[in-house]
Length: 79
Image (cartoon, rainbow, N blue to C red; front, side, top):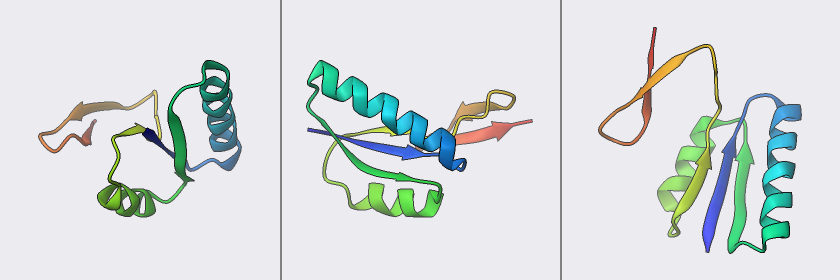
């Protein structure tokens, strides 16, 4: 089972994202479960560190900013 993690500061946007994902998982009968949706990036990191399952991560997205992937699988902001 895949674990789903969502990280978004804006509560209304987070609620919408979670609802869309939940509806899709339910309709498609996917083998996935929500583990966490939060605005706290540190809480997300702690949960991911202890997770034993493969996960799908929906980090906060900022379309006006550019990012690059670094060697640890996280992103660095490019100005």
